[in-house]
Structure formats: C-alpha cells, structure tokens
Amino acid sequence: MKKLISILIFVLLVCTPFLNAIMAGNESCVAFPQGCDPGGGGKSLTGATVGSLIAEGGTYFLKSSSDIDLFLSLVESSELSGPDYEALQAALNSTIENMEKAKAIYYQLKNLAAVTPYNQEIISKLIEFDYSEFNEERGLIPVIFERVEKLLCQGDVRGVYAEFHYNTGQILETLYTLKKDVDGGIFPNLSTVWRVNQMFSKENLFGQYVAEVFYNLK
Image 1 (cartoon, rainbow, N blue to C red):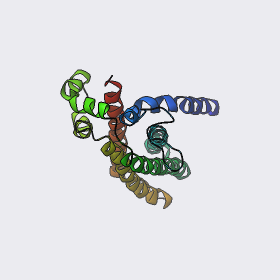
Image 2 (cartoon, helix red, strand yellow):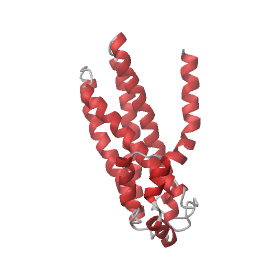
Image 3 (cartoon, rainbow, N blue to C red):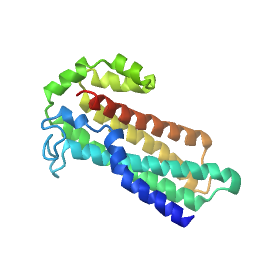
Image 4 (cartoon, rainbow, N blue to C red):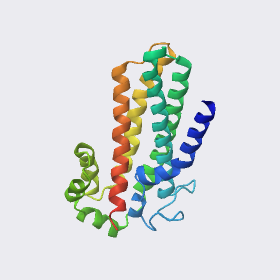
C-alpha cells in the first residue's frame, strides 16, 4: 500500500505542471506585451512576470485542490472506520497552506497586471470572440462560463486575475471554518464540506474555461 501511495504522489508531482498549463488560466498572459515569453509581459520588483505568476499561482491552486480531494476521501472513509483526526488535520493543513500561497501569488499577479499595458490586438480578439458559439460547441456549464464571458467579452483580463485572488480568499475562509472544527476534535460539518467541494469545483472550471478561450483565440 505504501508503495502504491508513493507512486501516486510521484505521478501527481510530475503531472502538476502539465495540468497547470491547461487548467489554470494559462495563455491569458498573451494579453500583455511579449505574450507569455518568460522575459516579457511586465515584471514585478522581484523579477516575476505575468506569465510566471499565472503558472505559479495555478500550480499552488491545483496542489490545494489535490489536497482537498484527500481530505474529502478521509471524510468519506470515516463513515466506515471512524474519523482519523490526525490524517484529517494533515490533509486540511496542506490544503490551506497551498491555497494561502496561491492567494499571495494572485495578489502579486493582480497588482502587476494593473500596471502592465494590454496587447490591444489580443484585447480586440477577446471582444470579437463568439462566446455563445464556443459555449454551445463545447457544452460548458453556463453559470460558470457566464462569469468568464462577462469579463473577457470586455477585454477585462485584469478582472480575471482579480477574481482569482478574491475567490481563493473565499475558499480560505471556508477552509478555516473546517480547520477550527477538526483541530477541536469535532467532525467537520457536512454542509461546509459540501460547500467547499463545490467552491473548488467551480474555481477549477473557471480557470479552465479562461484557458480554453485563450487557447482558441489563435
């Protein structure tokens, strides 16, 4: 069993950068000068670029998403074997740690994008993009895609990054509520568990849909 777990962890670590590249709003950096070139798109005082911050923030978000899946599986298995509070704490602490890192990175991204000029050619493509046809062809979830369309049809890429930052903060608030119970030896409230699962699912798809639109601008 330990060997199997080790293999699964290795696979997740190897695949995370690839998942990030297609799931967490990537390619949106083309909306800024020099696109997603590591040396372009504006730089922060630390030398980070729009593209590098998108990739780093997305990586931490997806790691947190993987951690919450472990937490949810432990909640589920508690129905059979009783709650393992030590394991629940470890999974939840890792979820929170990675989400806090994602939020901090998205804060930097939001601020850097605010002072970086747009690539107007890309902004024009976003405004002219046929979102209705795109949605219909792919069968996307309307309530989530509408959030993406509302921002991108106005060319508001900065608004997308502000959403990333705000939404990670909202998820963290719910995670802190779960942590308070688990740390106190109280089994997590199922209603809160269901809500946090829904929040992760929605934000995963929000980032994916943003990435899909940018990948189809070409």
